[in-house]
Image 1 (spheres, rainbow, N blue to C red):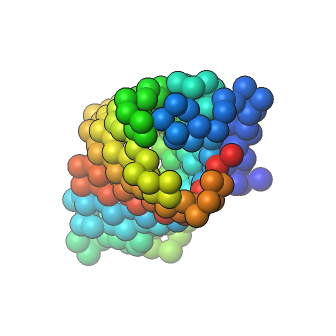
Image 2: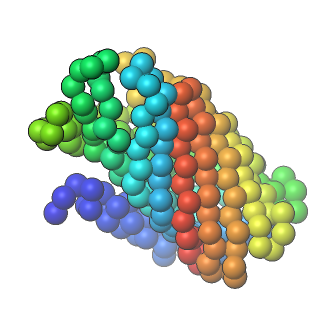
Length: 214
């Protein structure tokens, strides 16, 4: 089985193993931390080689351990557009995977708002690099961590939003502060559409897709 198929399966198995311990669907603020979502992921990276676009798919999940703690995880696989390493040089595109798993703390601060703090183990991998039409399997990556704090609020029964400020570090001077905002439109208590945008230095990443809550 290929790694890009195995990683989401492992993520799902880890989170769903916590289901027997899962708390009730909603905490005191009425927000639900039991869900799984999947959808489209896209990234725009502005670096020395110009704007580089990538897209693919992503999976995110969360499971409440108690009224105030939850575990969460995410996986994304993206392919970059072809770009030149230097002006007039080799043309390159890459296949990259990123996943994380962590622990979150949520504290109701209003009738429909939680203060949320989360910390996670992160891993970024580049599986394949294609140079001038020839593909190389390199399987290189970095391990790191992230920490973020923010708020999550339900504006109505069918609309909620979130905003976070965070920091991530993969070592070797690969660290950055970021901001993340998003929303969910709920069709009913089980199904909705979730969206999220992450802003870092020269890097913007989008996610949109259906969410199932229980």
